[in-house]
Image (cartoon, rainbow, N blue to C red; front, side):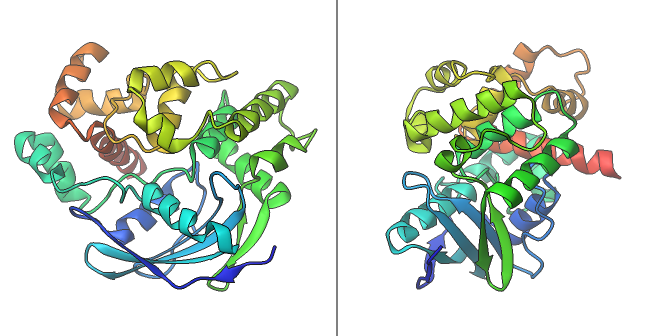
Length: 301
């Protein structure tokens, strides 16, 4: 793959943001399985297929000053700008977070989480396509086993990209995935479903901007038409793939368990938890991420 190292682009966050928090989250986020994501303070390395052209890009992100990052892209000439825009979404810097602190001021539970995880915004899958592939691979598997399979698929069938002296495996682009008849040790039904996801990505069904522009209910309805995508997977794709900032995950049981514990409502049904989450608008997805991060941290201690 012939690539060019392009002049760094600057992205300024609206509202609190800390790249170090993003790197720590990504290093510990099992689906990403990226402990090498950032071994230097204020640095993050990524490799991914760029939406639309699906050419592979390597990206180095550095935090040069509070609230802003510098993005260096190694990619073909025609995709550099799109790669920067994709990084903006991956790090949730395409959302105005200046009102996020007010949610914490109104809700003490959220306020404590904001103090515990300052500057942490959702770190997304590179695209809804990759989020959907993760959902298919991970179905009925332990998360660690699914993460290992996804990583091996990227290493064996993706593209190796060099980023700041490190070789990173970029996940196979949709056409590359479609060309594979066998995918590691995955059962045939998962291979068929992954091929359906790849075709949907090529047809624009998984376009991040289009999914974000829809009413969330309509977007979730359309996503559940994809083979193997149920309510949990559809919400994962919309929230953690397309980056919708204001969707409450009604199918995420671990989130609900954390809410019941922190809000001291052990018997609360999902409908009651949804009512609580209305106070988080327009950042329901962001607060959900803090709650899940807190649960994982407590479980690990």
